[in-house]
Length: 96
Image 1 (cartoon, rainbow, N blue to C red):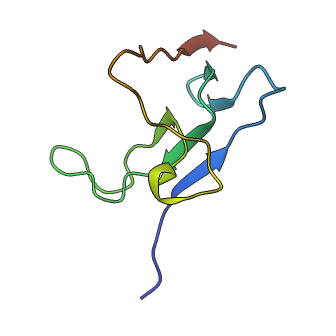
Image 2 (cartoon, rainbow, N blue to C red; image 1 turned 180 degrees about the horizontal axis):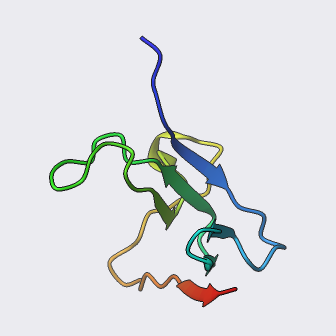
């Protein structure tokens, strides 16, 4: 059976400031995302439940590389006890 919708991880271009944008022409609003995370998971809400319906929403989740502990070619995401984890994600909303 073919899967419907999206549940996909995209590797982000580190040279581009705005990593993702969502635009609603009918509501004249825009969401812009900037982050220092290397990827964004794009999910179209296949498993949303009550009070919503499947595909009635979307998610853009900035994160490290998916499955990095099991992929030798990916940068490590291991955090040692003495280390601090800090990342930045900024969601900006504007009208047009």
